[in-house]
Each structure stands twice: as structure tokens, then as C-alpha cells.
Image: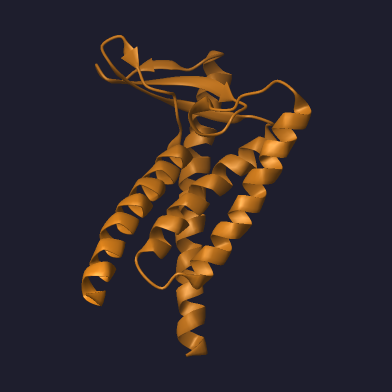
Length: 166
């Protein structure tokens, strides 16, 4: 029992660390390009560019503030939420645990940047014609994927549980 729990925790930790390092590697690559070229503005396709911006807000630039106090409070809140997510990962026994792990891995990647750079490098510019979506990074992809899957799991798993009760 204890061995299985330890193996499960190590596997979850491996996924979180893998997501964190995928995010770090992509950001370091883009930041090195920016250092070499003084900017990053790379056309990849008719719908995808790499364009480096620095984000002081949360995912997709939301809640961006110039004041250090607000920035630090948001950073503290993100840290508390990460602790809560770790608690949920420990308590969750179904597929939702993986969605929480995606959120945690991405969140830790962005939290690292908030502390280390006091801003998060975003660089994936998805667009259709002249309509550009928010510029985001690999961590944001995992956070968004985890949240969307969690919402879908809550809808469909709760519906299944209610049907089994009847």
C-alpha cells in the first residue's frame, strides 16, 4: 500500500517536473533568441508567430498591474492556490488528478518566472487573419488544458454519478 502510494506520488511529481522543464526550455530558447536578435518576431505560418512580450499579469495578461504591491499579492495568491492544488492532487482518486497536475506544472512554470524575472515571458501568438488571440506560453497551454478538462470531467463524471444513484 505504502509502496503504491509512493510510486504514484513519484509519477505525479515526474509529470509536474516534466511540464515545468518543457516550459522552462521553451522560455530559455525564446529568451536566448531575444538576446541574440534584440527581439523575437518570427513568422511561422499564416496563423502562428513567435513574438516575445513580458506579462506582469496572470494567464493571457489578465490582471496586469504596474504596482509592486498588487503584483506581489497576486504572486502570493498564486502560491496559495498551488498549495491548495497539491492538497487536491493528494485527495483526488480519479482521472481529475492528471488535470490538476497539468495545472500545477504550468502554474509552477509561470510562478518561477514571476519570482525570477518579475514577469512572465509569453511568446506564442496564435491568430486568424488580423485577429490575434492573447499571446501565451507553454505553461499557459497546460493550465488551460487542465482547466478545460477539469470542467468537462466535472460535467460528465458528475452526470454519470447522478445517473448511478438513481
